[in-house]
Length: 417
Image 1: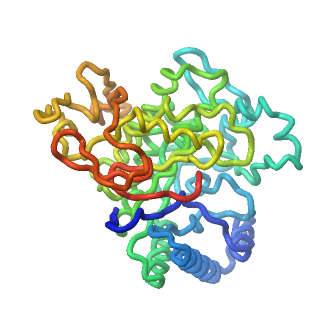
Image 2 (image 1 turned 60 degrees about the vertical axis):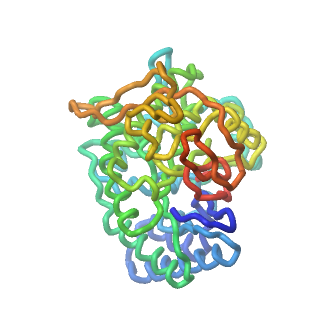
Image 3 (image 1 turned 180 degrees about the horizontal axis):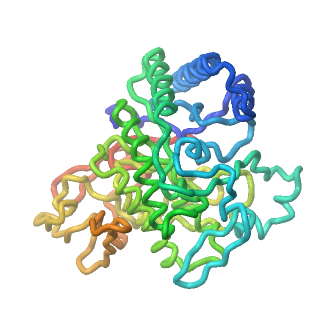
């Protein structure tokens, strides 16, 4: 990801409003009309070209394709960022409803399970508002989640190839140097029914392995890959009753391990991660505080992070960076499991001597995936928002910008997927 010497580079969260013509075309295709695929692709290509041009005109340095290749047949659709993957994965029964659309499920200490959508704690707490069509809390169209009935495989090669071609043509036409494309992370992708894998953990890793092909395709095309994985934070509200923070971290770190497995060997400096608590227009009184999951997020092996901070529920949470230190540059000796004689830091990413770690292995194998360390907060030597290099304490220097990165991606506009 490129940097700038004269300003903080601006980007955004990903999804942008679709034009009416594209919405109508998507609606027809979702209803089964595939009579003129060439005409649809022409409309999609033109829409992507226009949205990239508009982003450049308003000063977006690192634009996206608006997620226009992820079908939306309605103006309001909070699920397209994730549901697009249903048609790109083999092994799914699209007609078999998943547990997330069936009966509520209850968790207990030490045993965390996700309940169904209607049983989310915020929806239960504000049931009258969510049931009122005039309250403004509508979630719009939400497709039913499918059920996994066989080995998960990636079958979306033609779709991602078309998305990449449309976006790269738009970037070239607009004269834009760099762009990003979003892809759903395995924690969110795996929120489907499971009638094949022995455990939920195996399902999560299977999603990660299958979607890796899409991740590689985006990176191989020279684009920046952004993971949309709000489940890392949003799952908290899908657990009923509210779990302990430690149980939630343990549950979530399995999903972090799966994501790190999916991007093994891929260029970390071309990948960024977007986290949110769900961006629908409704109450958010049960969101987990950023402070409770920031170290979980930072365990993801990417170079940049973004998260919502433009609403009253989360606008204060930039203060977490007063106490939590961003991971050091990947070339720091501690990242290689070696002590640093200059800063006296023990091996591990920002890890203090004696801190705990959990080692995950891929389900069904003896292969060690990664050591995900439970890192304790360290006082930073810089404040968020200072677009400057900061001393990491061992003679190296690390850029900082806007609470989102450990390289220098810059300010992120917008909020949520």
